[in-house]
Length: 500
Image (cartoon, rainbow, N blue to C red; front, side):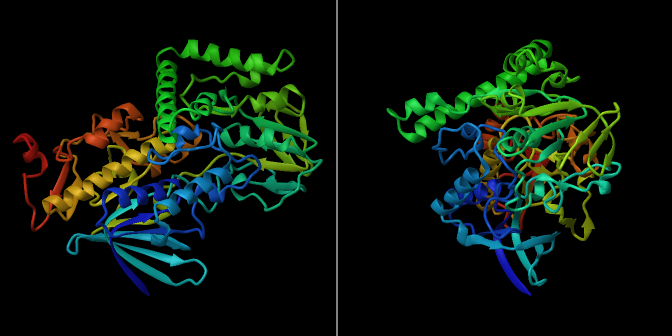
């Protein structure tokens, strides 16, 4: 069994993990770090998903890293372009040499006596185990199960004689030319697949139980495209990034404070693009904007294919799957050669690895989240979970900056252990995601709780998180530092009371 010892171990080499490695490379030059990646390539989500039209549902000027500009003009980029961006970033910052590919993490175990984590992983090709010990573990594994997506218990699914596909495992080089396609679902994956498949399919139907808000966004950032003629690339990127952050935040806050007005605007925009012959009831959700995540489509591509008759939307419930399609509860039957279950993801933290502290199994649902990136009572460990109301990488970047500051601070004061400690008992029964979406509710028993006040609340607000994570006092009275050679101010709540 191979063994590796590191100062910091990053788990995952996707968008978050490569970003974490680059931040460490820049800000913690004397720290030995490594990366474990289950797949054989960099990219994570953007390497796994291969379905037609795969693209981001956030603009690339905020989904890109804060330290490396996105130089293309597309607002919502395709999956291969995003993977290339991540790969190029890893090359430019020379972090690929730190990656251990093909290893699935089985467990992460903290030992207080040794003051380090032992991470056990298995090579899925050979079956051989490898162990890594590290002073600090940074989980960048994303938020869903890689092995399988979520498929509800649909009656009669085994009866279907055509092709059944879940987008998470798209068959390589699958030809759907001339086929009748039904996409079950109305989330980000569905609204991407439907317009993308109309190029070859005979007809594509999006079958939904209830409507989702769909907003059209520009295909290109023309402002940045023109500014590049006069300004340096990084200046243009930062301007676009700041502009989009402010716009995203304004829309989100208005959605919460003026939901009826934003609803009217969204529906009016959809009505204008769909034209007079499309039934608007398929695009009128029963909930307010941003109670569930909103879908974005570039240049209204979904609306366009529906307007042109290449695709259609059906709002109904499934009675049963038949050999030739779907029998609906309304009595109608949808004929299909291909059924695509775009029914969502199965949420999972830490890649499904078991988490233990001094031999005690940690139930994540019994922990409280500290600043959206650490767990109360779990030492020397952080994880990345991006925003649900804005781009993932906005949170990932500043979470990485916080971890770099924390690692450097621990070295400076001689601390070998840091533990978020809720001495006031601020925990609540609310999970930390501020959404009522089905995939969140299904996974509620696998998600950490959030507290009744800061820093135990998940703010989902970049403009508040940025100063707190980039500049906030690390000795805030909630992070408890320990170490035999601890130097400097006293830590913990007592230190906070004394002015630490």
